[in-house]
Every structure is written in C-alpha cells, then in structure tokens.
Length: 241
Image (cartoon, rainbow, N blue to C red; front, top):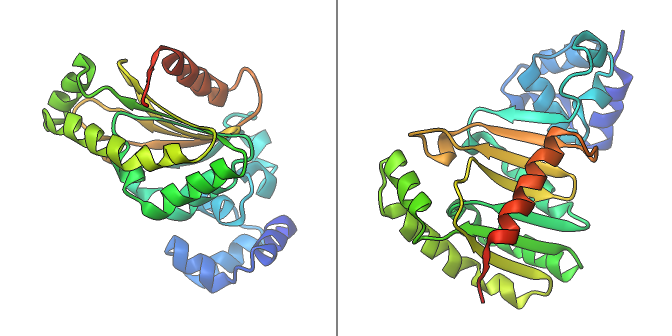
C-alpha cells in the first residue's frame, strides 16, 4: 500500500527521490520502495523524519502498535554528536518560539560556529529566552572529567575559550550565561519542547558519545526529565556578567 503521508511530506519539502537517496546513502529505487509502502530501517526512518520535519509516528503510525507505543517522543538516535546533521541543529534553534537552553561543560563546537551563534542571537532578539550554562573551569568536576577524557587541563581551557566566544550574545536581550559546578551526566540542547541529549560516557569525549533527539510536551516524558535536570543545575549556577 502506498505511503501517501510520506509521499506528501516529501512533496511539501520539495525533496526528490534522488535528494533523499543522496542524503541517506541509499539507491533512489529504495526511496521509491519506501513511498510504495516498504518500511525503512530505523536509522532511515529517523533520517526521513528529520528531513521533512515530521515525527516518525506521523509517517508510519502503524509502528506504534508494533512496538507497544514506546518511544513516541524519540525523534532520532545518533551514534555520536558528529553524526547529527547540521540541518537538525539549525532547525532546533531556528524553530524556537519560547526558549533555548544549553547545558554543557564547554560546548566549544557550538560557540565556535559563527552562523549558529548568529541564529541564536537572532532568536533572542525575536523574543526567545536564551539560557546557557557552562562548566566552571575551576570546578573539581571539570578537572575530573578532563582526566577521564585524557585531556586533563585542556577541558578547563576549552571552557574559558567558550565563555569568551559567547560573551557577545549578552548584547542581545533575554540572554543569560552562567557557570555551574556540578557533575554533568549529559549535555543538553533544548528549544521549547525539543531537546538533543548528548550522553557523557566514561573515558569518551562528548563528541564521540551518542545523542538522543527527543520531543514531547508531556509532564511525565523522558524529555521533561532531562529539562527538569537543566532547571536544577541552572538554579545553582553563578551568573556570568
């Protein structure tokens, strides 16, 4: 049976079979089979959903019954942070209507991205509240994390560089930057009810650790659990003037 929902979503996004095939690394005939009704593997479903800006359950609603309704809020799972497409980062922050929250130790990859910083500043000028919490470079937890990753004091240096690079954001309205001294189990990148959760794995840098892409407005969801953890860290963090 033809997947009319997927066909319309691709048409609305102005994506041809060859465009999808190129991005996902498959043959265009494979994309045609998906539109014709074949169910893609999970990683391809997640990639397709990201491309058309829809949830996986919107494109393949019957999968909810096959998996017992689990993971409805999971938009995608990436093996490491570098595998998250740049378009996903831009869509996350660019689509924020109410708030953007970032919780990291250094987040240097983000603040070094000039276009991403401009995008976040633009959202702040548009009325979005922006809160960014970086690790305190003098914190024993930062030193411990640096030792775990095998980079020792380099993590503290990365944080100091990140704080310098993000200071221009303070010129925009509704932007707050703080330093926290907590054990960080995940880095969080949040826009409204959507969050990218970058796991911290012992001995592995965050750039090589998995990322969960979650979306939910439900109070008892996984998404809410991670967002609540941000609030707990934020309250205890010190403002950067």
